[in-house]
Image (tube, rainbow, N blue to C red):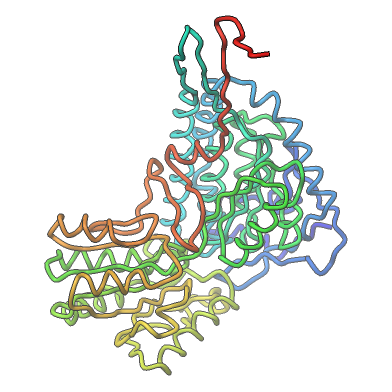
Length: 514
């Protein structure tokens, strides 16, 4: 049964938070199946979960995880919608996606504020995330009419041709750090190709996917084409093991990704996995130091450091390390921490108390292993009394770090930068690659020949030269090693949501030896 907290709804409507969100929106069930909000039917109280406002540390609402009946209902709705949606031409689907993009623009501030309310990131970052959703819809709307095969001329006038066909019902499972952006990144290419989707957001951030689903319907997406289910591990397992699901696209931890691979292997489902990272950022002495400092901050402090591609291992050439740290400290200490709805706020709230405390334990462990904490790593109580229970943590810079420290080897998923020094290019490349992850990497240098050489040698799915953490919608995104399988964004996403059929056409008689 869906539960709502009236007091929290009143807080929601105060001017400082979510001016655009109505009480009616929160008072409805959090599942969206076949075009309508539906109450989950599961009676498993162990899977109930609370939804928090991280900046205030308060409960927004409670709901239950979707059970087998809910999963069957959502998958069946997507399966029933597939024939008609897939029969539309790419041009027709593209027009609908463009209409949806325009509707997202109209309701963009509403989406952004809801994202802040449920995730805790600053409002300016949330607006960037919403713009990324718009970009993805427009980009894939343009690609939809171009999805086609090729003709192959054969001897004797015979020929073959290929068809790029949709897969069917796809499942998207999102993460809590970029809730609406990930929902858009997964659904736009899937729908452009003619697939239908059941999307499960993280249980920590379930709200923006529901609003996005409603906007999709307003923009012309037919009922059943995009459905949203709320839930925790059991719901995810039911989705990934469902026999009518053709593909699963997951963003999250390596451990969960491994479980999804195992589940999908049983009936050979297609999968895309975007998993964890412990990425290197290499700063050479010949770099533009001001840009390198900015790049290091972009690589560590966006979304409170809760970014899988973050370059948290910052390797600085020894000769410039002191100057680099001096400039970095000065800029980091100027970052304003506080109400994420305020335009000047640079650091918002972490997702929940448990995660904030986990990051703090990592930082304390680093101190015990010999790291020097130059700044940050402490819980902050904002001067605004209404935020006194929020999950705020000051951005942390750790010096004197070594490759064998836990904070250098493990993904922290918080604003905790480890500064290391190096002397030679070959040395730092070898150290940079000494990790089980391979999601991203970066290099700052004025020598572009070296920049290209180092990028070629870094074992990661993405490498930046003289910038960091920029992901234009045209650029494929994914990892090496345990950072994942497959690619999202760009033309690669279209390939991952289609399958190739070959058709042979004989123009002569059958040459048969029998």
